[in-house]
Length: 315
Ligand code: VAH
Image (cartoon, rainbow, N blue to C red; front, side, top):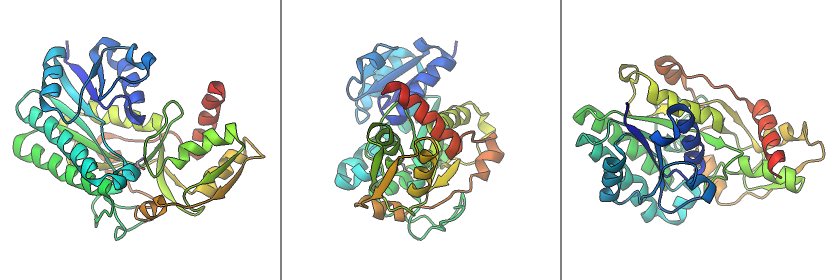
């Protein structure tokens, strides 16, 4: 039998859905969810759950040994907006949690690691259209700096110690089943909830702010597919560009209006506008498509239909 999977940060926006999908694929008992505190009772009761502080090396090590874990998905991090409010803790959490998992793998206690990077590694001097896999990267946010540094360390641990760590530069992610936490792209989730509950939305980014985005179903599938790919097909050990679509608040509002004609939007940009303006508008992800056969499935129209359908059931 293969070893088990441990998800650190399993109660977050990605972690919650990743846990559910991994349990469908590998069996509930083979996927251990963990977070710094217990999440929703229903989620905690849905399979093996442990309270683990991502900054506590000994705790992570003991859970890996207790459950005979082979693969670790490290999803704990402070996202862009929150990290700007607490730079020191964001750097500590985003970097030292990664070092703990890389060092456990270097010691032979973990076989394979997934670590999420982000298009936030790019900055104001990066080409904004079809941003290449390799280009100028001068991130201007704490989150982006931590993700760029993390990519360098992932590649170093692979090249020097043979650690099998794999990473994706996620764009903004949109999901119906879990609320996002502290991101700049969170407007693209909030807007669907407010369209159904209030029929209107005040967006914290300006109407022409174009950002790379992806539906969570695609992001979860990409995460599992990169981990299932043969090691020799993973030619990039920093992190792969990944993309599905890009849109502006105006365009997502138009997509919603096709299903909710009376929906209205207005704009009140806040501090997150400066973060968004530092990021690319669209991403070239050909390396992922070539190396491990990535292909997205959802576009703005199909995502909007799926989001509104699921959220309408929850209301
Ligand atoms: C954020 N959702 O907004 C994250 C993501 C590209 C954005 O990294 O911080």
